[in-house]
Length: 257
Image (cartoon, rainbow, N blue to C red; front, top):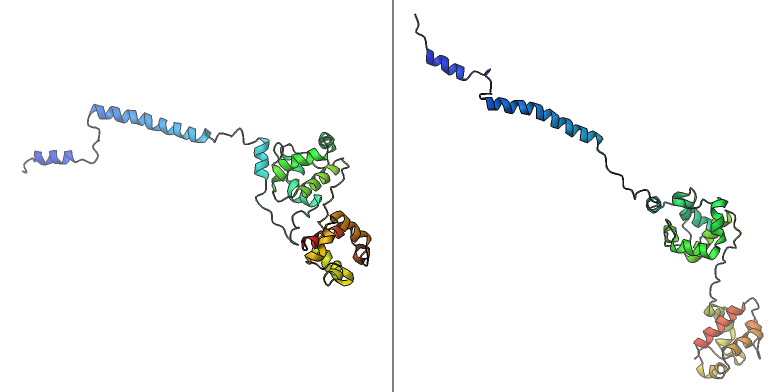
């Protein structure tokens, strides 16, 4: 009959994989508390994740903010090359710049064609409207956000929009280009003044020009316009304007002092 082995039985019982890891009352209390706290914390974090959302910026919907967001960062144009600065019509400026706000009335901009909205502005006069558009007013940036627009183009755009909305403004005319005195000399005056034909003082001959210069610019201009001695009126070219004749005289004087 085999003898009982009490020592072996005790060793096996100490390593029983099914035995509980809770050995003391304190461990039992900790386990119970954790079983309550962990789910509660998880539920709190989940609720915060669901209900939380970024706070709205109260300044995000102001007229200025809306207009700034609507400004185009760039434009892609197809077809012919863009018009040179200063040559764009009022309608062209409106379509490429102003329509962004004035087509839909964004940020309080008066819609084109809305006579009621434009009426009080039209009463202020064209000069005031152009000044406001050029410097910027309320949500509208200076020159509608396009710094390449010239003063003349701004005026044309304002006139175009205002006239489409009940006004009867006259579009400002583009200033005439300054007459090119050298060009007039090359095409008309040099026939005589380059060679001294018929006693015409040669260009650059200071001695020959000295007595003429003493008469003064106005006297020289009148002689050139009306003709004097062998020189016919306007140097024989009646198509020249008074400004072109003046420019030619000024050029020759500047080269002969």
